[in-house]
Length: 253
Image (cartoon, rainbow, N blue to C red; front, side, top):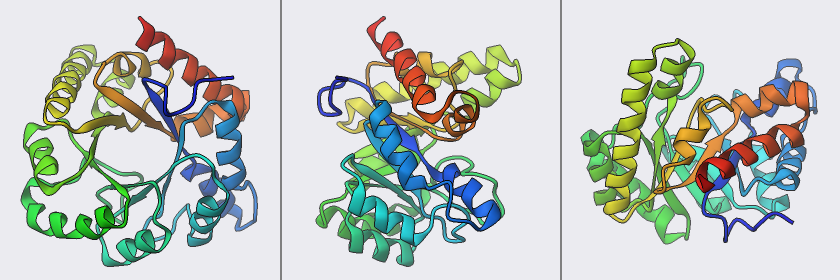
């Protein structure tokens, strides 16, 4: 049996949004993202991430209801900082809420949340979520200003955006990639020093995950799009198991 999520030094959260993307392309009932979440648990995931966007382009309200009812793993509910999403989170009270930036025209979440400029609003926004028992995470760039602001508003967790690092790797821009990786490591240590739990995610693949997994301050990686794509060729269980293997090997080394 794999170690439980409470004893693992590095957790894997599997984002199931793009199972719903495939389902919604035909307006059918399948593939079922809740079934994917249950398979992810069997394959070694420690948590499930789902982003309920304002335009409902992938995950639906009914998906969230079913995930809350059927999951035994912790649910990480990604959401924009809007009154509608706050009401939904307070109704379901998931284990964690991750506040992310959201623009309707974007393909996926681009960049981290601007916390420093909206500190007062976000502090008031997350207060009811904290009081309801949700663990509040803020998805941000590896920037000391944003980390300090997330700490000041009372977030328990920061999730560092790894997209730029992964993009540089994909483009063969290795000097820029290495500089971004170094910055991620420095900011993981900085956030940890403030008492924040550090997560990371966005764009991670088998080729890019190991250096991030090796940062000792990082406690959780959230990975979705790559795993759902890889599942077409390997199957979802084997795709997740291979990611788990690479992460564990990097952490052990």
